[in-house]
Length: 73
Image (cartoon, rainbow, N blue to C red; front, side, top):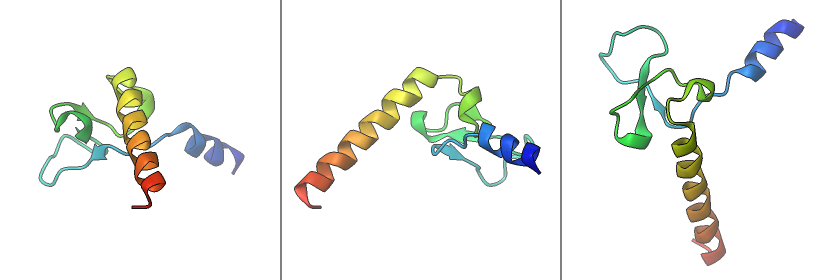
């Protein structure tokens, strides 16, 4: 049981992963919404082809969310 928990902790699902309908590459293969779906993705941030771009994208999203909260939106 401890190993199952460890495996789950190691997997970090990407919030930008999108499983498209009709794509049959295999289980867990989809697209990255960060670049309008031009990159195939497995959904695990450990295997991201563009980790720096992902961090920057998510940081901008969080900054925008913080600004909206400060304005009371």
